[in-house]
Amino acid sequence: MKLVRDYNERADATNFSEKLKSHGIAAKVAMNKGNNSHIFGGGPKSWGVWVLLDEQYPDAYQLRKGNRHKVKRPLSPEEIEAIEAYRINTEIPKFKRDLYFALFFLAILSIALIYFF
Image (cartoon, rainbow, N blue to C red; front, side):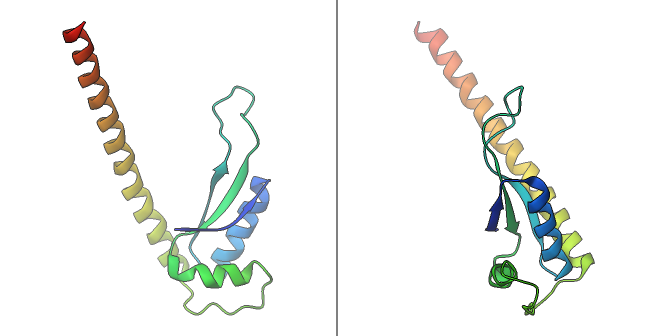
C-alpha cells in the first residue's frame, strides 16, 4: 500500500480515489496526518489516497496529472471489491492482536509493580 497523494479536504481525496477506481485502480482514503481525538476535531488534517496494490502505484501517479494515462492492468469493479474486503478482514485481526499484546504487557507490568512494591 503506497501513498499517492494527500489533500486538505476529505472530499477532494474521495474524488481522486473514485477517479482511480474508475480507471481500475484499487484505492483507499485514510487520514494521513492529524487526529479526531479532540472534541472539536483535533489539529490540522490531511487525507491520503493510498493505492492498495503496489504494482498499480506508477499508473496512479500518472493519473495525478490527468486522465489520459492508460492503466497497464486495470482491475474490474469486482476485483477491487474483493481486494478491499480482503484488506478489511486482515487489518482488523492485526489490530486485535496488537491490542491483546498491549493489554498483556500492562497486566504483567501491573503484577510486577504490585509484587515489588
